[in-house]
Image 1 (cartoon, helix red, strand yellow):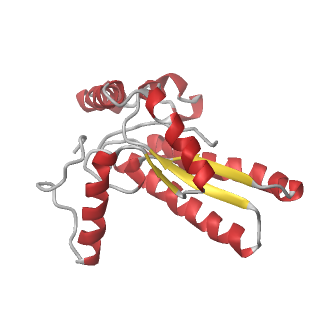
Image 2 (tube, helix red, strand yellow; image 1 turned 180 degrees about the vertical axis):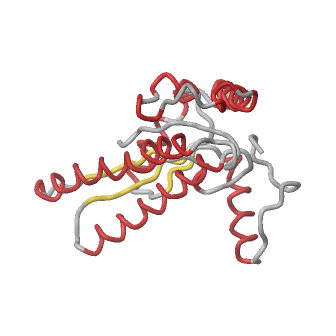
Length: 200
């Protein structure tokens, strides 16, 4: 179970590059580091194994105000899909899943507590700006009002037993996912007026 990540919101033209580097390392590279370490061990063991990469419904949907978050989550899903192809190609007895919850009551809104020193620059005016504090409050609101954490565990374990690739825990997003696919097939781009993602 590969579960690591941070939540950073903000416009691409506002958010410092160091924040992009942090979220890419936490939300995408953590999966790379994890799988690069455990897959060779799993291959040597030659027993059935299962990797679950915690991603987010933000990896299959998009909205405004959270470009770095969505970008890293989409990349993590693409990575997981490609690894699944590769494991199938070599006949490995290893399944891969992506756990894509909506907002769950976790500690995610406290990401700043865990910010490594190399991604910190207190002299940057962004970190004292109103938009920075507004983004922190938005993340806190979404996480603290999300679904209870105890409500998703059984869904994840059932999906592992069923060898599901996509593990979606919030039915409210199913329609939005379907609409996004339909819009893509129809060549339609993002439309702020029609999006229903809660942090648009």
